Amino acid sequence: MTLEEQVEALTKKVQEQAEIIDYLTKKLYGQKSEKVDPNQLSLLDKDEGVFIEPEQTGEDNKPTQVQQKKKAKKTRKSIIGSNVPVKETVIGLTDKLCPNGHGLVSVGKKFQREEIHYRPAKLYLEKFYTKTYKCPECELIDGLAHLIQSKVPQPLIPHSLASVSLITEIIHKKFELGVPLYRQLQDWKRQGIDLSETTITNWIIKTSQIVEPLYQQIHEELLSHRYLQGDETPMEVLNEPGKLAKSKSFMWVMRSVTHEAKQGVFYSYGTSRASSFAASLYNGFTGILQCDGYSGYNILDDSVTRDGCWAHARRKFYDDANKGTKFKATLPLNLIDEMFQLERKWQHLSPRARRRRRRCYQRKILKKFWHYIDTADALPKSRLGKAITYVKNQRDELNRIVNDGAIDWSNNASERNMKSFVIGRKNWLFSTSQAGAKANAIWMTLIESAKANRINPAEYLTFLLKNISQLPTFLKPEELEAYLPWNFKSSRLKTTNEDNQKIAA
Image (cartoon, rainbow, N blue to C red; front, side, top):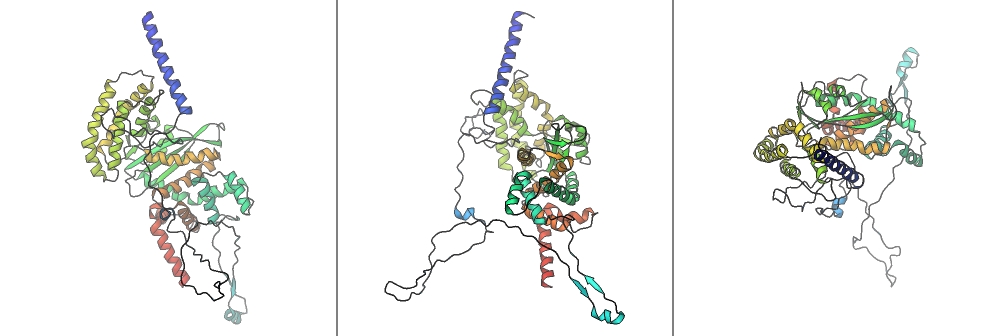
């Protein structure tokens, strides 16, 4: 190797290392949001060619310093929900006499101000008794006492103090609000019950086993869909056979696309990120799966068609634009941003209408994008080089989306579901056992599926625990149909009507 070649090789290496240092420094100390300045000039000479909404990356997004769109100011009317009861307080005079000593007569009232009050939750202990009856007529006939006793409803957990409302509140705090169990103990003690972490952990696991058939039913329903999205994230399970406590396990998620009528989100705990687990998770699925470029999904190629995610592709080019001291958008980043802006305009259209628009408009932008990728000259180990390599490896998967309006332009929906788990994981840190990790997957599935169907998760869980706990142990799929999240509203209405008829009778 000549001296000039050595100098050139070392120069490239220095450039690559300097770029890595800048990138890692920004990752540590810079902003996490992937918004870009909406006032930035586009390389396409258009004002709207920028991606101004944040990506859901599974990390906490910090506020950016770029110019934000002003949100409409909330009024008092918009703050207070329609379900908040109203109490009127009319303040009168204690001495109903005028200065001359004559009696006063009320002629009306005038509004002065309003306040929102909070009434703390209260615990109470419910004791169940059964009544015993006898039949005097039968006793006169044979001289024997014929005693009949009423039946008490089955307990949620045998020999336990746990009620539906108590378990629902514990699950709501942990999985929706991200409050770990050890922190909840202090709050429950202040309210009057001295629980242990072992006790409420067992409650969560045992009640998850009650609704597990429904959890499996959601999985079966999703496998029958034509389109799915998938993602995975690491987690820690301390007591796993044959593994160290700090070894990585994974939480996998699959969900329906946003245009699907039946919205389902399914979490599954796996001891590894191996392709064999992906094969078992998607066993029976023969449609189109949208995911990132992780090679573990390659095992599905025989039965599943994979579509790419433009958000993951964009993230690579965003890292390249953000590597220096000043953000500098590149042509491929701006082209991808323009694709996303078009998709936002079409998000409420039917799949057929979206497909027509994609084939008409997105193909033109994709032609420019791939021309840049094919002709770009970048160091292979640089941020730009890695971004180019990623999209080249995903070229077929990324291009397929143009011809199918039912699939989303990115799998950000599944990443948002995964972010819900990640936020909780940062608080509770790990699962102690495999049973606990599986319980986490079950409750996250039911809560996120409820959210996807725009129903209140707490109301849905209360409905499930109250009703499924009274059903026989071995249930048929058709018996569980009424309890699926997309059937909840009609099932709850039917149950309420039946309860009202019983009370009236």
